[in-house]
Image 1 (tube, rainbow, N blue to C red):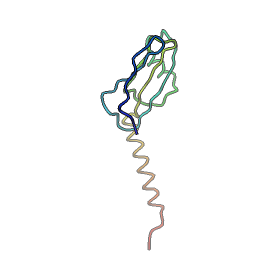
Image 2 (image 1 turned 90 degrees about the vertical axis):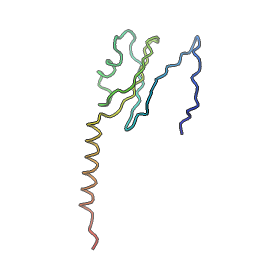
Image 3 (image 1 turned 135 degrees about the horizontal axis):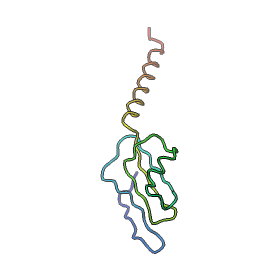
Image 4 (image 1 turned 180 degrees about the vertical axis):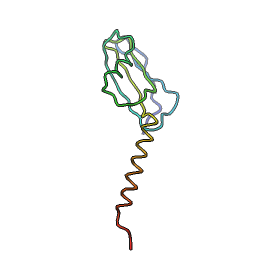
Length: 106
């Protein structure tokens, strides 16, 4: 169970909190990716996505700590709607095939 009572601690001289703001609940399949990426890159989120190590998902939220070395990036991603529809169609087809292959009661 999530604890919604958590309060972010104030930043100190040795610690700064990176907060990813989200104004709505994200429905469906979601992935959170945490990256450390070279400092000085103009668009670190684009650079992370272009590496090709992330699944084909849409980024719906992001936060970058451009004050750290290396930069820290947090990405919140969801499956694209077309992928969800394709996955649902595959599941339905599998279920129908299983029903068709199951022995019929006599």
